[in-house]
Length: 357
Image (cartoon, rainbow, N blue to C red; front, side):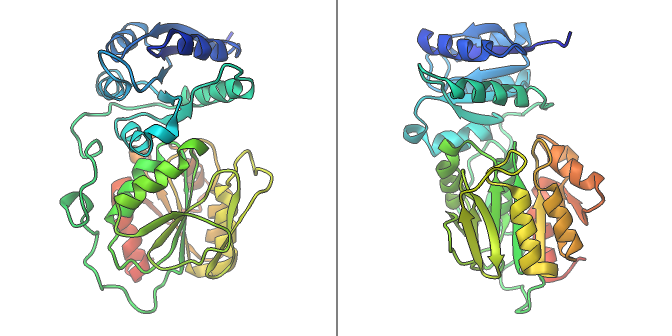
């Protein structure tokens, strides 16, 4: 018999703890190994019980959830799912702070009549249990808030005004999932203000936190970042984030389509659909990027970019939280450049200038 997934539930509310425990215990593959009512107790119980996954509340006495997450990820790392009852009230700060201190994902707490939400929570926990997390050192640049444009944290990869009028890349399409927001933030903040290529991104994230992600990325980059809307134009220096619940594609050069449709391979939006459409519309002037994430969404799309003679970039294994998506693309032999997440912007700038293949 396979070993069950041990979960530690952390919440200062007895009612919320009961709801989360009940939601998770409905799944026969999950076992609740313990509960904690504050962050200090959570840190001790992670050390003692060695759970497979921790669900973490945010606002708690003694030690808050994000401080506890930071300590756990620096001392005894384990996949942590941050839960909140009110993401709109706490976001966008909650989103970037949670991801910055090492949480893998964010989810809304199940309601009294949880129903399908209970299943979604269990599914998320089971997915996170497969992630091999590494020690997340406190005080590193990854934890520090991004500085203003021009600071050492966000210095452009290359000086402005170095791009040719005949850019070799017409569109950048990005596939990203678990662990991706941190990489995207670093990538976009490192790009220069005169970056001449539009960027479209599919980032798998809970819909309740999508607006917060856009807000965080907007304030930490010199580019314009917005949620994609049907009919948006692809403008140089503008970053479009695919909204949850719809597919974002490129039906023709210079324009995006956002349409509600069936999920593809379980994903809505689908990174593969974005990349395939980029390959059709931009051909050899398309650049596909696949970042950290579970599963294989985006891999077929990267293959389409490669088949269209476009450029393909994958995040390196040592810099990924989860090597599933980029690993599958590399294994297919469809990746031109494998780069560390911290070097992504510099690589993309070189490709857009025509300095590399």
